[in-house]
Image (cartoon, rainbow, N blue to C red; front, side, top):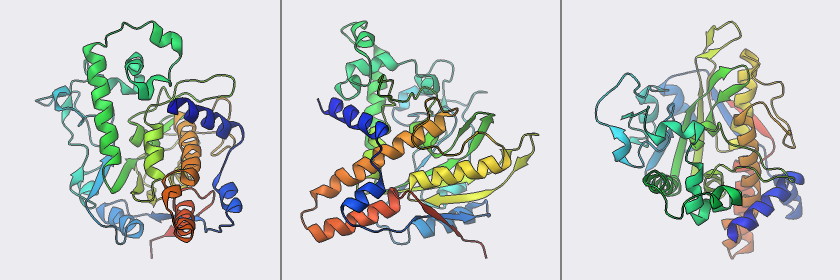
Amino acid sequence: MKRYVFILLLLGVLSSPLDAKTVGSENDILYEPSAVYFTQDVSADGIKKIYKQLAPSLPGTVQVFEYAPDSFLSNADNSILATRPTDEALQRDLPPEFADTISRENNLRYSFPRLKNSPVSKWHYFRFLPCLCYDEKYLDSLQDRQCQAQSWYPSWDCRQTLKWMHNYEEQVQSPKTLVVLSKAKIYDANSFGAAFENIMGGNAFLLTISVEKVGRIHPFLETWAERLADPKKHTLFITVLADIPDTEGNLHSLGIIGSTNFWALQQETFKRLNRVNPVLAEIHSDPLPADPSSHEVKGSEMLDKIIRVKVAEGPVRDIKNPQKQRKVLKRLLQERAAEAYKIVSLDK
């Protein structure tokens, strides 16, 4: 029932967006644009500059989520990892010192998955979609006929897949402070990946939801939106813009950007990529286009809309003191759901 309510809410959001400005005007709350920090220093020192601005005094252990190709849930269950290097081993997106300068707590150990046989390597082309039928949390993301065609007892692959998914969700929700460290990548004229691909572990089969038809929902969209709307948790986004190919194949190092606002970071990523290589005809469109050319844009827009709803209606409403609630909501709107942002350069 909870899932149906969420889907109906989301359909309403997509047809008539409930954004941070609307929430702000209803509560008479004024907030400044989010800050997006930038440095041209593509190095561990550059990462440190950005991090110090985003997290000057955050308490506790900091964990880093860093993405490498086809590595979805690579640490959720060690049984899916091979014991020796192969020719198809994971390659690092970024030098290890980039993550180490923030924290030694990293979700990715760069082990070597069995890429030919492992479900891990197939998340970009998620062949275990029917497995979601065996879990009430994900069940309503699918059409009835998909689940009615399944056997009553889940296969070993499905049992393991659901186990990895729950472990992953726990990894996402547990840390008080989490840094999403990504490297922006251009694959072809209409495809690129950045922070959204990182947190989703790939996004090739993320389909939009329309009023006419409910399509597939990536199962972790709501998990990440809940985290980003929680005032007790800190999520920082840092994206490295290096090795960006132009239309002639020449590589460019553009710098590093960081923000606590997912939408702002993604928009600035799109803009800077487009200056080098026009990967999209339009950088940003609101409302969602019927058929955007990039899964990264589509997924980013959808996640952003969910975040803005949850910021106003989520855990902040549990705060009993009205003045404190107002103060926290103002901070969340500015940090995580503002519809405008400003660039802050850290270079002298």
